[in-house]
Length: 233
Image 1 (cartoon, one colour):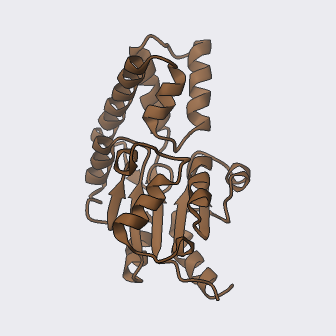
Image 2 (image 1 turned 90 degrees about the vertical axis):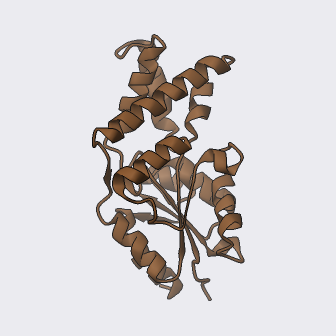
């Protein structure tokens, strides 16, 4: 018989929170502070890498873009987080339609919900405050909460399990996200449901290539998906 999902680990930007290009805008602002101007070949190359690695811990992305220069990577990351935070403060932050209702329904069904991100804690908290989501989920996690490694490692998913003790088997976990790295972190954690949503960075082909077990139009469809899988449909 299918096991009941008791722990749901949800990504934020692109999955439950509408991105609308905010990550790219914040990256461009951060790159400019380090002398990488929009329209240049270097900016184009770096932006392509940012797009390909959506979902990864942002400091890890900047370490790749500025190899061997930890100080510069940290400066870039701080500039990125500051620019993103400013965009949020200016009101450029909206939930994916139906996301709040889906989370509330999941919790009402007795499931534990954890929100995860590749951003730093200060940015995650700013997003949660802007949306008035501070108490929406059972737990929120960023890479630092899981020892520093973000996606595609399974660390945040497994930290969610250890912190909440919401499941006695990794097969009772569902992981949901909009990026390839979300899918990889889900499959590597052993989650039975690894659902990709089409409201963010990557398309269905990319999500399936990295292990998506299901594809959803948006996170609003998740409660119905879990009900179907548990009914054996």
